[in-house]
Length: 486
Image (cartoon, rainbow, N blue to C red):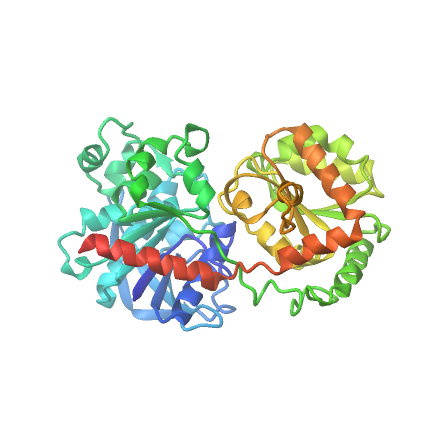
């Protein structure tokens, strides 16, 4: 199967969130399963061309028309590390030399109009007809529409099916009606596809309307976005296409996230030989100038510090949480109000809490391995990756029961009430400071029962959330999309 995988970011080249982890790993696993995969990314100037061995393709210059002007697009190529997946970097300095992945600039719509058009134009130049074009999030949402309208004359794409993945429905790529003209898209075709819906321009709406198959990154989130509470205004068209809507939980890369081999942690361990975790906990606390006590749990947080992640209810309960017998280690950056919260926490409770405000890959691994618990009180969470890392590292997740968190974390006490001891974490449903507090209290109290705690750890560590399982589900989805084209 030939797959063109289109995303606005991918690890290790450019990353702002979980999409980069998906785009940097799923194509490699698909290739290992026998697919031919080409990955398409913008070439941001923050990408180190020398470090990542980017090769400039000298004989290829593509004119792309956006907002009444023609821009020259160049091509760089490389291979995804550890694979033969060809990475194609769309280079247009006018739009992508901004020193960041995403901007609030007036022409943000133009940047990704160009990217969408350039991907189609490159496929034409390659004379490479993919069986599937897998488009991710709003930044790639125009490709299904372009194939149905602007480029439907080209028989190269006659059998090409499209899959559109929503990683977070809260980011839709909405712009004014001027974007219709900038993108050379016929507004009427959208009105005909979705009569009665508002006529504003949305990259994501186009992806939902014109792709063959739609999916999101967990089964629960696929159901949640059909409701007004979580659909962010897209629930009507999603319900109209619900027969084509699926959920697949993201996988994780166990070659990078594995406590037995992780180069970022000082002591290695497994589910059977877990002593190295306690040593890593001691090392983590010493690194943050906190006193080690084997009977005091460490609660880790690694996150974007934004409202979606539940930090408003955490803020409301923070002083009660600080009365619990626990240490807190926080890594992240985001909104000023939450950065200030954790900054002040370190000053107010210097013997209980420590924080690093920013991004640090080394610390993210160390905190995952050295913590006893990991807190994710999200208002909504399409999939979540850190709870999957936590399960692998024997770090018991405490989560709100939403999206991918609900699909991957099972509450110890909920299952135990039915005589089932396979729970791997702690969870709560009500989005409130009080339920957050009582759930953390439950976890801290359970930590004191060492035999039970080891059982919960082991349950999580033996779970398999590798990308190979998820990739096979994507292959089934691709086949379903191809069948629709026949």
